[in-house]
Image (cartoon, rainbow, N blue to C red; front, side, top):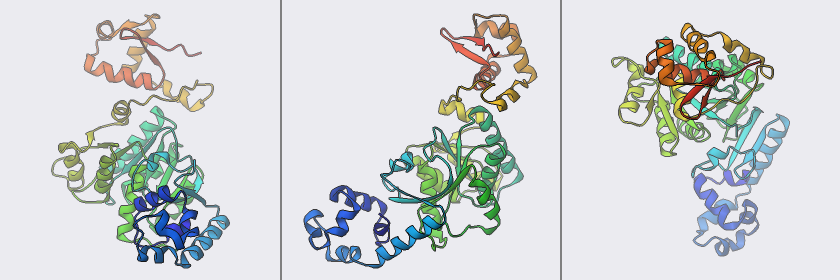
Length: 366
């Protein structure tokens, strides 16, 4: 597989088609003299590309480098290869991973945005990841380790104990940009680094676009926090849309340059508008892992109710068998358009349970 990636001029989709026809990467190299028989249409130029001995030399060198530096090599037919990414026609046939992370986590979201993030964008990013960690504490956050929103998302994930993966546009023998080296090292403890490029590969402009397809393809959804009218985050969003993945964007003021891209995504129906992690979780129809406070001490912190939540919980306590939403509106004096999000958030925190017939009741927590 590694040698196959060194055959220049062929796309990943073609590699996969060739492997499916021949049965394996080995079959290609073992039958070069009769390649035309097992691969109809193989040109002399294609045969010459496969016959280049340098491909195997590079592959052997890379395997030695990976073993020395604790790097996992994931072929697209391996069980640990990102299954969501495998569904994409242009997925890399080989990935290099370093760190401690499950690339097939139950829920994965990519958070991307401009490199020239404003304080508005950084605040939104940090708040989104923080709220997400409370609502869905096992979410894997993916981004590109770039300046601005990317590194903000990674750091916010680490601060809230969410696993996070940085997808790189170069080999794992370097970190770009250099100032993010320490953050990258910290990410290895609960997350990791991922790339399709061999060691020694420098970051080129075209490689960042290739990187973006991995960010989009390995995730359930892409969230654009802040973006100008042009930029890599819009490319990621476009790729996510082409993969039929969910795409979301935070809106900004109409005259803010760094919000034009997000506003355009929303206006063109290429991304759904969200203003919080609650909006995102609701749109994705995600439910938190069922853990008791005894199993997860951090969940005990969620008992700090807001004043409105306290009112709702007090009224629910009066109806141990559950209560209809209309009755709850009367008892709490909270409008239904405000009460519904409150109930949803309390349900996400596992304080409220939805019953048949549109009734709600408080969870009994010992």
